[in-house]
Length: 89
Image 1 (tube, rainbow, N blue to C red):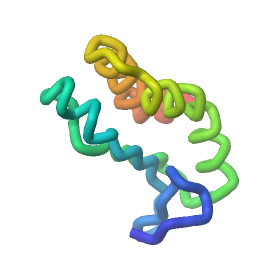
Image 2 (cartoon, one colour):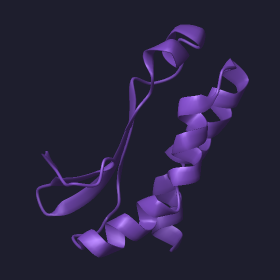
Image 3 (tube, one colour):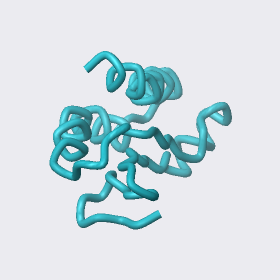
Image 4 (cartoon, rainbow, N blue to C red):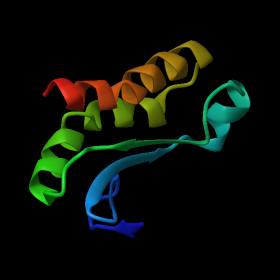
């Protein structure tokens, strides 16, 4: 994986991916959370990938600042369904 200068956008092969690492304090609070969320953006265009991930920055910020397991699970679910939104978009 090659990291771009955008913190959650990574190039793997010829496809860009979204990657979000779940903070350890949230994983301790809710062990069912994954260590990271990684989804293909199904594009080879950096500008398209940045635009798709840009729509998720609010959720990423909320995830890093949440303090309850219920909030973390809800936000992770919304971020995990990201791939389905890409297919529809």
